[in-house]
Length: 197
Image (tube, rainbow, N blue to C red; front, side):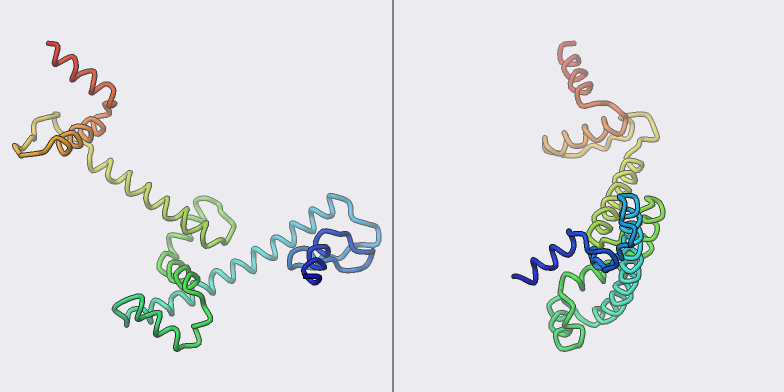
């Protein structure tokens, strides 16, 4: 516990002049003239850039390991059998979660590079990338579905007689209204007006 406190204090206290201070994992040397806030921020920015660059290299390495894992995975019918096999290899040191992340990186690499370029995201968090890339894919699917649902002819001319229950009919009517840019409220008002007529 004492060692933990030492590390914590090394990160937060200012070291004597000329002694290296550990900031995160990158040592920052304090100059004899003293550090102004501006100099400290510059040092932190440099440290962050070093860490980010190293993390970027790690991301590529994780992707390469993921390629190997995907190659091995093809030989197994289930994740369970794959996991049992990995347990007999030197790759047993990689946690199941990290293996999943590595495989995702390998299988989604082109999408990740495209996302990072389009969003100008410089970070390398696999969880962040996974959530944002998956969200972008989901949004793209929704856009594609909306395009497919857009009508090309006159509304109501291609109705095929079918037996639908009330829920299916409601869903169909709502999707038609949405495809024709009619709000649910406007649809309800039109239905009520047609009942009064």
